[in-house]
Image (cartoon, rainbow, N blue to C red; front, side):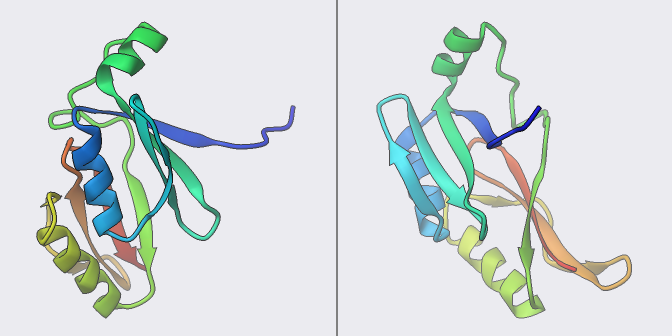
Length: 128
C-alpha cells in the first residue's frame, strides 16, 4: 500500500488568532475557510490544518482533547544555528504563543526550547 501524503489536523478555538499566530512566525498559508486555516511547514511543505474544534468533533465523532493539559504529538522544527533558535524564541515571545521552556543546551550538541501556540499545541525548536 502506498501513502501519497500525510498531514496533521488540530482543533482550535479561534481561526483568526491561529491564522495571525502562524503568519507572524512566517509560515506559508495553505488556505482558509470558515471551518479551518491551513499552513505549510518545512522544506517539504508538511500540511497542518487547524480546524475549529466543533468541526473536528462533529466530523470525527471524537472528543477533542484539551491541548493545554494533554498532548498527542509534539512536532519538532529544526534550526541550523543557536542564533536561529534564539530568533524563533523572540518571535514567539512577541506573538500570542507561549514559551514552555527557554532556549537551552541539553544532551550532546542540542540547543532548543518548547513552545505552545495560542491553543496549547506544543512544538519543539531544536538545533541538532
